[in-house]
Image (cartoon, rainbow, N blue to C red; front, side):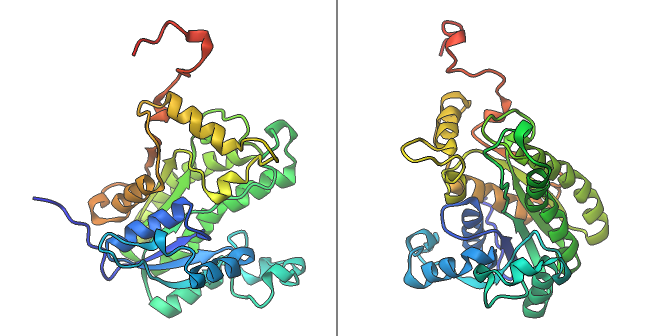
Length: 311
């Protein structure tokens, strides 16, 4: 007998969606396919661009669900996850024209707004990261850049669960996204981002225990393979040169056990499982969705091992 995931009546908040190219959008779509109500948190500087794109229909093709209907985003909240409360927002941000006309974008304020609008939520997805010095090797990363990467990419998940946990229904699910650079050396992925991802995975295990006991919710993270999203394409982007993510995608396809393309929907479907009743006993897990690349200890396309590999 086939198992159907039914999330009708469930509210899912996905933090970190600003277009249709990333994993956050794919996760939103997978949850919407199962009937969940989708609400989104978007970084204030790109909020208007995202809203205009939605209004113009720029994402209509990417919004089509399995039944032919279009994914509905019930509400979009401005969210800057490096600020926990209004007292944390510096004057330079308040007066920044990219934040003009916006308020209530700290994690605490967004949680209160969601509670006012929906009462309780069932699913929270942390799909955001930022490292201002990501193109710098760790040896050249400043303290400010390192801590900024940790703040935006790791502590933001801790803070989000701190503020959202009290309004999550029992049996709810908190999910984040990580990357293999947390445990393996990935040259070009610098600025402290590898450290931030390692923090995120460690925190996932600790929070699974703490939030499991306190709120009766599950906490997991997906270690996703490379995807040519808008955000990833910005790393190491130089005129006339291939981007970091293009190199990494080619490397993954050449060396992963499954020599196939990785699609955002692959991560979306894994997230659907983890956020659904099917995953009710799964918590504290880093789930690899990377065609198996994490398992490899040798680069198959290395010239130094030519003749060893027989396929």
